[in-house]
Length: 97
Image 1: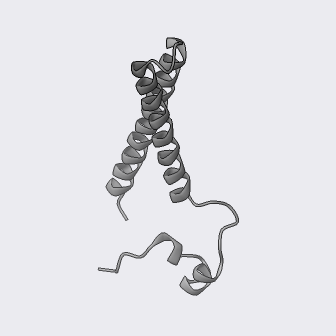
Image 2: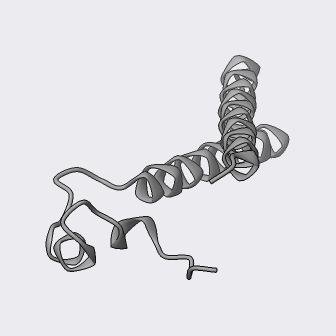
């Protein structure tokens, strides 16, 4: 059975060419990592808005509700992306080589 290699190591020119070339844009891993970081920041903002409202610093409840909904939507979006990634991974694993 052959050894499992990283996708970056496999290219039509061979593994050496894959190591020397670098993609122009951000990697998929960076995109997912940035999305998770952004979602975390949005949730932190929502928590601060809630905390400010309970302390009486924020008088407008609309800003608190908007921050909470924004955090909820970003989390739901992130979860849907995760679910789609898992589904794609499972489908790839079922492929016969």
